[in-house]
Image (cartoon, rainbow, N blue to C red):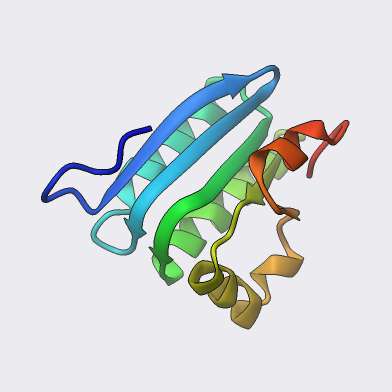
Length: 122
């Protein structure tokens, strides 16, 4: 995936890996940029996806808005019998998840390959 173009601070690329929908994030996820992720996750859940994996390996920053988008999606998925996992958290992003305790709420994998190798992540 190409990095965000000049002026773009955030991008989300969605692809299927078997029965897992992978959301690859690039740039900075915050209050001003969260809507594309919110919309992509909602569309996946509404479309029947039940196993979601969010790839943070190219995300430089995530604030509480990004975390809230993920928490909301997690609740929606749980109601439908689904799950959401995280992969590739870089140190600044991992720190925010650790400080808030969210790293204990979401299954966290070192990278996408490890997450997909598990028989059933989440």
